[in-house]
Image (cartoon, rainbow, N blue to C red; front, side, top):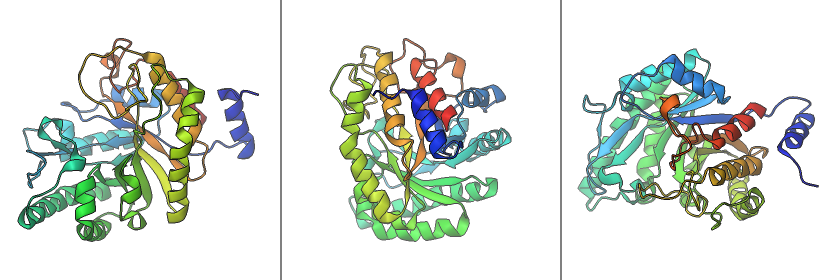
Length: 333
């Protein structure tokens, strides 16, 4: 018998004594040039999101540059400490919980996972710079009482080559911030991240390759998820840590589940159904698992009315059928 979404929700409610299973139902609240306003948060509330990731940024010249530039007047408002503070206060005023997720951007959009220094001197400069960057936002997290702080995003080479630094950094962060910690490991990195025992959640940016179909069906996607899901569950249970998808999302384009991490600007055909199916599959695969805590949709722009839409092939689900999928599942948990 094919189980419909409504039947699935009813089953969950019955299994939980009539109570919905709580989940971190989040959106990645994109840093903007402007202050956040109430109507920006209203759009989040409309899709029943209870969490938002606030993402201030630091900038690096190239993958071998050791200095991080952050919290400057040249950055967009939302990328700075002042902007992050304003976003958090507004979200908290609407009872939306926050994961503070300071991130790095390398000029030209180079992948942060490849960032590695050529000399010990440069490694030390990078470590000192990153410590200042992260502790700035750890103190902000404590000041504002955010629920989760993400200590880094997709920094594979930095993490693998300098594990002692990261363990020492986590201790310093714990002294500055008393809330929950995670790290956003890329989908092909999380099994080798060495410090999960020191954090509260296993964080994964869930861009797993699943299917080569132009418009993948939900059932095919659920089948493709199984081996990945087994590995994630095994790690979660062995470490006794819940899993968060620190980012999850799909572009509204053909072959969206083949290489979900692709973010290039090439012209590709819009495929709204592919995005909606992929969203539905990830909810049905994970949101009922006891070892899974929830996740943050990538990505959600402040100006909801003018974001996304049926001609957009980017990640945002805004004003697309995928938005209705998110609202349905978030509303059920």
